[in-house]
View (spheres, helix red, strand yellow):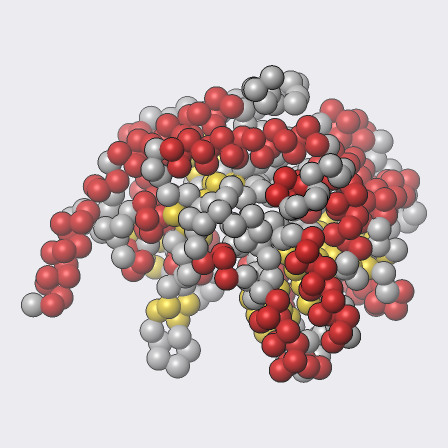
Length: 473
Ligand code: F0G
């Protein structure tokens, strides 16, 4: 059959509140044009994140009922540990309440003066957890990532030459190397087995351990099977096992490919490191056999990790993301290519070429998608990643102005995706009239969560030309 159907039927439903464009304008004005400040009930299709927002399966809900809430040595922990052993292969498994707690623990153990952590691209919490312990987080993505329109199959790869240079020049200051699979900040793009193997070789030659940020490991395994030469016949389990065989450990947010609403872990092979991690775990998370999780959540994750490797599930998930990307591309709408593992990324720079980065095209586009159809997305551009040069005080733009439409797992159906496409196409058709945004107030750090905005009037290309003319005259 040509039609790839959702490989599930719906067992419990959560009603959506339908709103009108007029209501949405009032709501958006009420939160100063910041989508993070909207109440979830005022959103029709919520694509803010794929983290912890998915639907659990009947087996996961059944496992919730099996949860053993004993403080120490629960059966839930045994099942959780067994699932992680079977899939990831690391000897030690330390449960945490989510991914960032795993990062916090891991970097704490690797802290040394002026340490440097290379990563293909740090996710923002990973970066913050390196910096909070006094380290520098260095992003070394491959060159292909800079061309959003190219079809390179593994844009998530690490730049091997840059890694070798960093390992050579920084020497002892590098306590570990990390690779994020898939590379979320760079568009959910996968990392190939070939690249992981080469990173492993470099780490071995320089005597530095390699850790994976494994949040979306199953999506990465699926994309390896689809795109890497010679991998097409393998099971997702065996590809995942090979990915992890190159690493000394990992951090994991179970809110992604753990298919759960909360949870995470850090895993490793090194006995001494595991002792250190466990003694620190007790201080901030909990006893080593539950860490930051309830027994029932460990059971849900144990089951979810296996379901993430179900090829039917992955096929449906990627088919629906590809479907949206293909339809948008056919209409000439600029998206990041090839489709990533968990989201569709719109290129707001190319979508709204009449806006300069100082007018935050990503924020403007995200606001329009909400006004048009109640879709909540997330700007990943100069609002989120713009920086100020510490020496000159000048604003530095993000490398790209993107809008991420993250697809929660097993939550929305084909008709929701058709609706999403229609919303985007309608904004595309009136794109020339979309106004830029300006920041009215912002906090010192992580401004995208709480900044207040307002649209710049008068609107559109004519407006920008007028402003430019005013500035130059
Ligand atoms: N690493 C990556 C690559 C992530 O995408 C995230 C979370 C984390 C670590 C942290 O995990 O949320 O469980 O503490 N990403 C979410 C997102 C929030 O929307 O992409 P966490």
